[in-house]
Length: 287
Ligand code: GLU
Ligand code: ZN
Image (cartoon, rainbow, N blue to C red; front, top):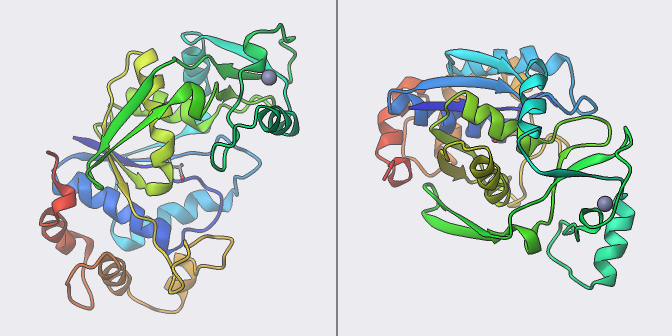
């Protein structure tokens, strides 16, 4: 088994990030696997240079180790190579144009506008500033999530549309990078936040197009505050760094994180002590 934690270095980790990191680590280590840290720093406009070391430090403080570290910005050639195996076309439509086109077709599909495929059928100059969109297969893609024990399906063409693999500014899209890396690193198990569940059919479709295996997925719930709202860096959730500086012990923080999942445990625990407790949860099973 090979697992990973794949943070974006956009700021300091908060408790919600830490809980996902903890579950990813517990999953790999409880099953005796190798654990990787992959820093997802392709979107330069969101990267904060201080965050790289802070993430490593926070994870180490919690006792969540890793065997190998990768940094996506050092792997651009791999993403470029994968692009050559996929059918893409240039698109210079702006966000606003897409919103207008989809409003005209009166196809409101949730929060994300479905790209109607405009540039699929017309010639668009492959100017430097054009984004590259993937001609998605006209198929329903399903996955059975091992954490929530549910099957989720999506018809990409009508529910997502041709999505961007490389942005107009040259930045490779998260979906492409994640699929290329999970395949290259032979990841067998992906434990990550439930906010990514709706991205997974896109990623599975890319895996199929690139002849890559599909890992097992475990989408874990996002941590919420006492009002039931999702913790976010922007919402002022306390960072691990702030907590550490108050003098609190990592064992206390780990205990709080595990209790927030409903686990019955002492007030202070080490990450290693949580391994058998994790294995006793029905969600951890590989079946
Ligand atoms: N880098 C992504 C994030 O921080 C996670 C990617 C993944 O686990 O697939 O939200
Ligand atoms: Zn377009």
